[in-house]
Image (cartoon, rainbow, N blue to C red; front, side, top):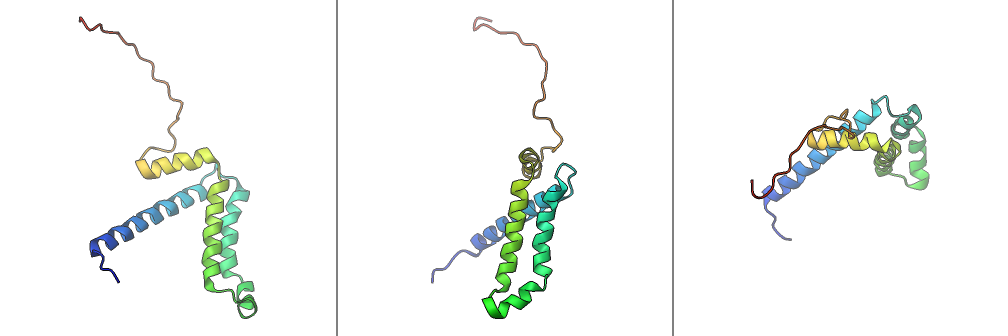
Length: 122
């Protein structure tokens, strides 16, 4: 077994927590957005209902399904939810979460200005 620096493990854990928080924030912002169709918002709800549903308890003795499948279904449902959301909205929200760029900024902003070309002699 090889010894690892404890600060390395702490950095990995901190990075995981940061990315988990960003993903959760993105999912929540998408879920509460009026730009996301209602049918799309059903996906994460159904994922969590699977976890709460009684069918899973009945299948465990027969199929050998474990609680790990509950986590997998929820994670896949959340991933699918993000994938079917409007791409431009997902990108705008990711930029806001990652870089602090407001999500309502218009990418097509035009700034009118004037310029003057200077020669090397000036």
